[in-house]
Structure formats: structure tokens, C-alpha cells
Length: 114
Length: 117
Figure (tube, each protein chain N blue to C red):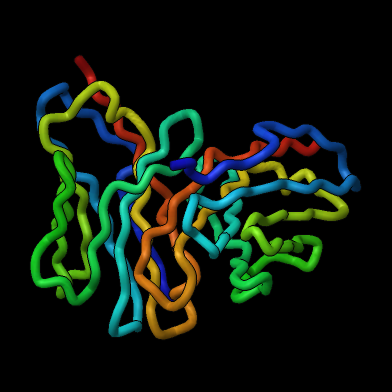
């Protein structure tokens, strides 16, 4: 039973560039959330996708956008990268609906912006 | 607003001893969930244990137990018989049920645990 997978593992970009991060949810899960974890801090919620729609969004600018595909996989896009966007980006999945199911996280993508 | 506070930036414990990691929370939701995750240096957040606000008994999962004191708004993690592999960052997190927050987890700043042989 495959867990949550993310790609790439590491990424280096320069200021102003755009980046796309990818996530495949755990088998049987249809809801994907994205979190940003800056160095030395806890993860911060970016947004969540369910049934290919953004269901809730955290306090992040419009430069952060996402997408969910029919197979439940998801992408996180960040435009006009800033140095402060350097962080570990975590994807989490769970069963959809208003449930108490636990969110399971992937290994993360470490983004460095130079 | 919902908030998680972890006041211990770092903790040390001797192998095979028990350790308690503190977590307090603040929420106005009548129903909520509390989680503990472990994050090794590799970065992946590993789910350890869950406690629902209406659960009558404290949650336990193997060597992990959650000391839930609702009136004090605390949800401390107890690790019994520490192992070297327990060395990692530990995060307490909360999810609200009725305020629209059920879609997201709110995390504390974490506690770094070091287990010594």
C-alpha cells in the first residue's frame, strides 16, 4: 500500500521563477492538503483540494495556486518566487468529506530560492 | 482563533526512560481533534496518535499515550521506554470541526527530543 508520494525531493530556483510541486495521495484517499514548513517552524496550511476544487485556503498570497486531477493527485504552483518561499513543502492526504480521518504526510519537497 | 503552544524547544531523555512532551491549545470550537506527529531529520511527518475532544479515555498507541486534560486545555504526549530512534522533532496539532477549520491542521512550533544511550 503506497503512502503519500511527492516529487521532486529537492529543488533549487532563483527569485522571480515559477515552480510546480507534485503529490500523489495515499491509496484510497481523495483529499489533498498542502503545507509550508519554514526552517525551525511548524507547518502552515496553504490549501486543500477535494473533488478537484479548492475547499479551504490558508493565509497565503495568490502566487500560490493548486490543482487536483481526476486521479486525486495534486500540484502546487508558486509564481514569482521570493527568497522567503524557501521551505519544506508537505503534502498530506486523507479520505474526503467532513470526517475525522487522520491526515498522512508525504516526505516533502525542499525548495531553495536563491 | 485556534492556537497550539509547545513550550519546550528541546528535551533530553535517557534510553529506556519515559518522557513527556507538553502541548496546550486554545480553541472556541466545541468539538476538535488533537494530533501528535513525529518528524525525523528526513522531513516526513509521521502520525503518532489522535485524541478527539469528546473521547472519554486518553488515547494510546503502543509506547505512545496522550494525557488529555480538557479543562486545562492540554494534550501532552508521553513516550514510554524511549528508544534511540525516537530522536526527532515532535509536533502537536489541532483540527477544529465546526469553524471551517476541519479541513486544516494547526501546528505548534515543535519540540526536539534527543534520546541518549
